[in-house]
Amino acid sequence: RFFNDFKEPEGSLQVIQSDTHLSFRSGKTAGKFDIRNGRWISYEQAGVPLLEQFPEPYFWRAPTDNDFGNEMPQRLGIWRAAAANRKVQHVKTGAQNPKGIMLSVEYLLTDIGVPYTVTYHILNNGAVRVSASMDLGNASLPEMPRFGMRMQVPEACNSISFYGRGPWENYADRNKAAFIGLYHQALQEQFTANYLRPQENGYRTDVRWVALADSSGKGIKVTGMQPVGFSALPYTAEDLDPGLTKKQQHPFNLNERPFISLHIDLEQRGVGGDNSWGALPHAPYRLTGNKYSYSYMIEPLQ
Image 1 (tube, one colour):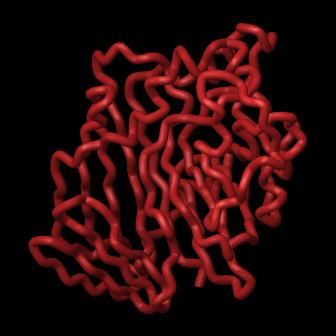
Image 2 (cartoon, helix red, strand yellow; image 1 turned 120 degrees about the vertical axis):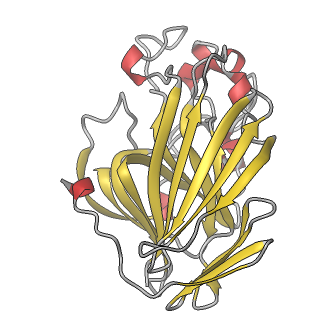
């Protein structure tokens, strides 16, 4: 029912468009998009940036101990940098209508030869609905570790609320003891520090929305148009990833970043296996399909 109750927001959206840029404002919310290069320049509330890095596709995760057991870093390694060398193929801007204005960016993920499309629907209240889709077609590729996007949120937004499975970390095949509810936590509660070696951790599944706020209550809210998974950590996936082999490092060796790395996923590969020395996650928790798409909305909290 949650996803059926979405109502188009009200507001007065003002748009200024040239051959190279699109700027918009609705109340205190404003943004600017580079049409030529297909990227966001700014998104802010009352002149304060809401994001330090805008959403980008991401398909990898820092290998878990079970992942090393089933040789995931070697077998699925092509996904580690699959999004890094993406090339803009086409940018399309629509005409403003009573529901807002649409922007669409078509990429080619050059490392794997697969198209990837992101659509941004700027709504009348200044919120942005992000939709991402990918069709692997006949490409002969191993399963994906995750289908999602990541962004960077100002480090001051360290108060986290979410409606989904919690309070502790949980994954698609490890979430039956985490119940759907409304949770309020600090950023420090997101990192699961009792793993001997840094790895993927701190995830939450079946999430309807997640909000990150600073001490004054300002920040962003991300609402899924379907259930999403998220993690919000002061570390990047690269910080937690030792590469192809385990390294002798521990959580205290990590240095916190001056931002929060926020992942918003449609799905992430299960973390389990019937053993830790070769068994794969069970089939329902592996990403082996050819087509993936999902949507979520980003909006200011105030």
